[in-house]
Length: 67
Image (cartoon, rainbow, N blue to C red):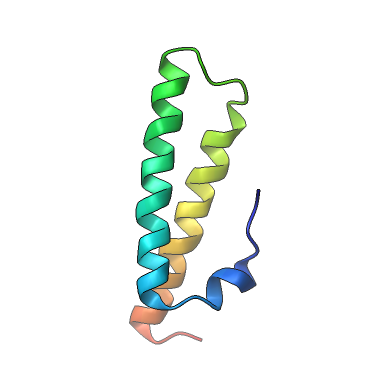
């Protein structure tokens, strides 16, 4: 399920970092399932990668004081 960018912006920096960590774990699991031919929907990998990119972008914005 896709999370809106606004919902990510409402999170604290620590929560964002926790989300990134959880997303990396989810990506690892998806890649493992993909390599063992157990993953039905291969688009999940792309969805999680985009989620990680969004989270990292928000963290970089906060670090640079943007928005």
